[in-house]
Image (tube, rainbow, N blue to C red; front, side, top):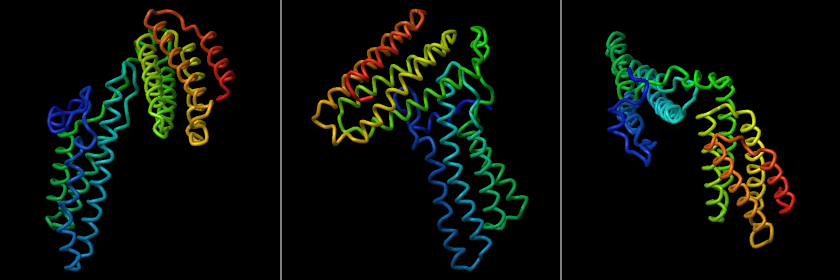
Amino acid sequence: MNERTSPFAKRIAPQLPGGRAAPGGRILALRLLPVVFVVPALMTLTAGRGVALLALLAGTALVVAAGVLVRRGLDASADYERRRIAAAPPPYRLAGALAVGLAFLLVGWFAARYGPLTGIVLGALGTAATVVTYGLDPRAAKGLDAAAATGVRGERLIEAIREAEDKLAEIERSAAALRNREFGRHLGRIVGRARAVLDEIERDPKDLARARRFLNIYLDGTRNVVRDFARRQDDFADTPVAQNFKNVLGTIERVFDEQVAHLRKDEALDLDVAIEVLNTQLTKEGVG
């Protein structure tokens, strides 16, 4: 079985720009499947068949859980495919397929009363159908040899990128709370530049130590400033602090641009100057 999403899944799933499948479309079948159990559940309830009702309820819960697991698996696999260097994601899609199989087994055996053998067959078919539709999770890390060739441990690189991505996610959450669209556009560009830095580090990890220090300082600074401003944006609206905040965002965006350019030219990060720029700007504008 191919570790990527199967061709059938790609055909049935609506696509977003860049070829990424829309979350709702990817798991539409699994989301609709619990509806099939509604009428039998009502019938068993009125008939007083307690065991059958429990089997249907358990099957419904398992299918709902399978949808969550498959969606996580597809998202994790998409992130894995996007990266040059990545650890194997958890086996979410496999777990989702097994949950569907167990749901079919329970419903077939205890609710439909087909017996254990038929229930097992139905469970196997449910698992197989889910695997065929959504594929399996990648099973091995990739790109670690390329990182090792530059003297960087792949696990260390993966950890650094994951740490930076977590901070970017925090920045995006705080940015979503801002009502000023111009600030939101600034932060969108900053996040994009930061991800460009991460992409260049994956391409050539030899400068990881300096790049990681730069990312930590700038992403920590950006995250803290945005978070604090978002909490008090009503108080800061139409005040000099709002303009100062805009100035800081402009400085951060410019410095990220410069560092991306350095990395693409295989030049060392101008780290000391970049850090000094941030510290000076935060102190000058009084929003740090």
